[in-house]
Length: 426
View (cartoon, rainbow, N blue to C red):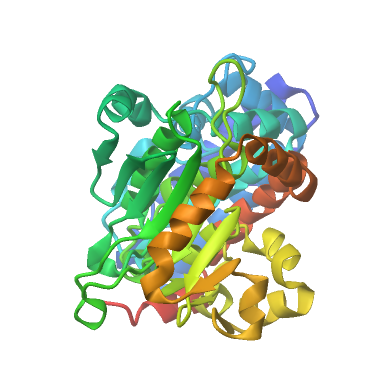
């Protein structure tokens, strides 16, 4: 029997013991057939190996998360984003996190046939975000503008427009309008959506001529909604089924990336973090992740017959940071109806006032946007919304929530009930 070593608390000694033990566990997995080709007995053996290794990873990281993070970031003198940090961990701590080769080997498989190595990434980020110094540094690092946005900044400031595949950003007066254009799937969220919207949000926040950000869905090509604007259909369940929803580049990045930037602004810009108020516009519906986006915005305008829902519990997953934010909007009982029961809130009903600031007829939307932008562009608004966000969602509270979310969501994404539910999406 391959017994896990006893950890002594000395980082150097425990690191050496961890590397030896976890590499043996990786060798035991490598000796088995690939996941799609295993017998039931072989799969049970693989699950036992994973369970042993994951218990040990958790134990090691509970003792040494701060030291691991210091090692990966040269004692916090560098600010790697999530993907780079995970890559460094796979190289510097063999067996503690998946290597690029291990992830690439199963990248083309459906979710149900993957090894589940993203759960090991969830264990890593649970520990790093739980560690007070490391976690705070990581949250701050993810508020920095992406390299892509930095590269596009001059063009946007000069022309006032950048077109990306899943989003478009345009300056109109005092507002930077981000239009979500992932139209082939009713603006469902996927890896592309997260990358493009974060770039667009960065450009709005970095632009000195912009005082307000506006988020709105673009017109659809889907026959049922042709020509109508849709805010978001939530997570792309077809991509989840096919294994194309990344734990790092989707599930964690959207929360620590563009959604956190909407709340907290963009960091690493002189003289300080740049924050701006945000307005969201719902023309038809905002499902799941779409509704989660609304919780980060300072004002929400909705067309009278539009609606929102958060069906994540029915899908078997966690609705991002909605569990942290929703109760302050609608109260505890309504939050449970939405998250646990999948209830809908319609803009034109009395309960809609808990979620939407202004409900208008479709013909009045553009005028309502202009009026809201004028209100939000007032200089004191940015300062006061910053103070409200500090009171409502302190960074440490957000960090603690994200630590738990990282692990729970990683496990949920590979749970049998989730895999059974998404199997229906082709």
